[in-house]
Image (cartoon, rainbow, N blue to C red; front, side, top):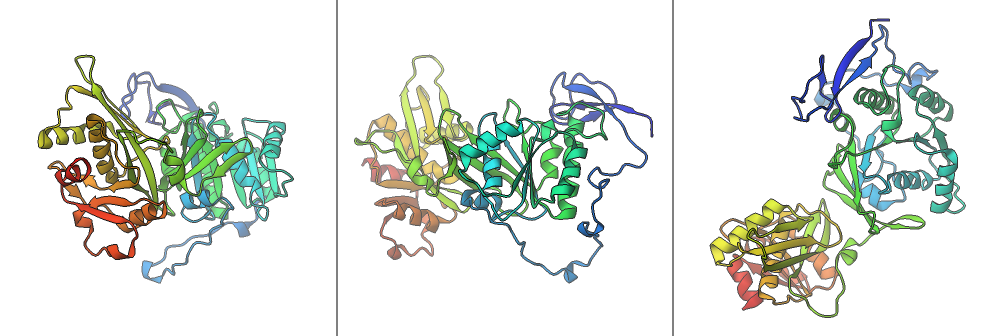
Length: 461
C-alpha cells in the first residue's frame, strides 16, 4: 500500500489543491477548502469488479474506423410514466447514468420509488442510504396499492456491500438515493465529501457502462440551487434532471438540463397528490387561470419547451413608485431581459416607465427562457399601464428586437396548432413567420405584425 496522501478540496466546486487556500481559484469562494485523506493502493481494483462478476457481463472495446461503425437505434426501456419518458428523450437507455437533483422534500425519492414500482416486468434494486426499509415500505403502500412490481429494497451506504448485493439480485435498473450518503473503502474521507462523491459516482459509471444497466442517482442541491458536490459530477453522468417546484404548491416540474441521448430542453409536469405524483398530460390547462371578468396586465404566450408547445399566462403590474428608485421584479422571467424590453418601450415608443414600479410573474411557477414570450410580456406591460384589459381569446408568439421590430420564432406551426386546440380565436405572430405558412388550414385568426407599433394599434387603437 502506498503512503496515504492528504489533499485539500473545495467543497463548492471540487477544486483540488496540495495546500490550504483562503479563496478558491476556481469558484472564488472563501474558506471552502477542507482537508481530506486520500488513500491510493498500488493495485486499485473497482469494487464492483472485485466481486464474483462473470466475465460475460463485461464489454471489451477496441478502436474502429468511423466509416465501419454500424449505427443502430438504442433499444430504450419505456416506463408507464409518459412525462418521464419525454424528459429522457423517449425512454430509459441501457447503460445510462442519470442524476436527479432537487430541493429537500420536493419529491425526488417519491418519483424514483414510483418509477421502480411502475415497471412490473423489470427487476429493480432501490438502494436507500437515508431511510429504513419500513419507511420505504410505508411510502410504497401509499403510492401503489397491491403492487406486483419486482422491486428489491436495500438500505446500505457502503459501495462494497452494494455491489455484492447487485451481483446477487442481478437487477435491470438500479436506483441510488442518494449519492451523498454513499462511501467507498478506497477513499478515507467522510460520506458526502468531494472525493467520496466523485469516487462513488465513478464506480457506478463503470458498472453502468460495462454491464449496460441503467443507474439513477439522486443528488442533493446547495442553497443556490446547484447540485451539491464537485462540478465534475455533472460532467460524468449522461443525463442531469432537475426536479423543481414549490412545496406549498401541488405542481412539480422535471426539467432536463443535460441529456446525451435526447433534447436538453424538455420538461415534464406532475401534480403532487396524496397517492403520489400524477403526470399532467395537458399543462396548458393548468397554466391558464380561469376568471369571470377581464383584468388588465394579463396576456397569454405560446411558448415552446423542447418540442412541446405550452400556453402560459403572463401577469404584469405597473404602478407609480412610492420611493425614489423604482422596483423591477420578475418571477420566472429573466430580469435583465425585462429591463431591456422596458428600455425599448421608453426609448422607441415614449412610454414613461422609468418612474414606475414593474412586477412581472409567470403563472404556474414556470421558469421561461423562450424569447417568443417577449410579445406577451410587452402586451401585458402596456395593458397594465393603460389599464386596458386584453381579450382572453388572444395569444402571442414573437421575439422583440432593440429597434422595436417583432422577430420570427421557430416552430410557429406547433404554437398555432396548440392555440387552435385550446380554443383561442386569434394569435399575434411576426410578419416574417408567414413565409411558407398556410394560414387557410387553421381555424384561428393569424395576425402578423412587423413592429410593436402595429401591435399597439391593433390592441389599443
